[in-house]
Amino acid sequence: MNESGRKLLKIVSEHPDLPIMAYVAYEVVGGDEFSYWTGEVDEAEVQDVWTTPDGETWTRENAECFYTDFADRYAPEEFNDRVFDLPDDEYEKEVKKWIRTLPWKKCILVTIEPGCADV
Image 1 (cartoon, rainbow, N blue to C red):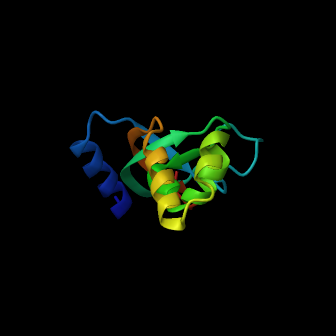
Image 2 (spheres, helix red, strand yellow):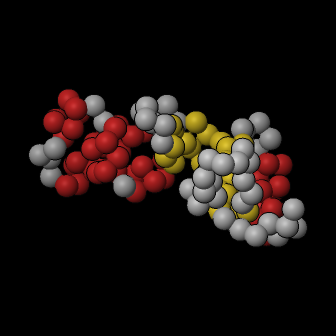
């Protein structure tokens, strides 16, 4: 078993009640001519995730890292109008506070990347 597999098993044993979600790189799912694809576990970690109304999945870590883009795309217009002209540090604080209010779901997030898995 590789290091990623050992890490996944350890996390699952430490958090047996959390759901496991796959975070699949788009290169893994290269087309629609097949029903299933093979990829390799690249990373496993406990994360908070949120699926947007348009079906994109974000981790809270990424949302907070890219908070400006995230707010532009997903915050209510009234919120963006209210915080747009704030000084940078206040804007960041307000957006990150809004991000924390979203219905994040804690899970074991398994990142799947392209690979040459022996099947």
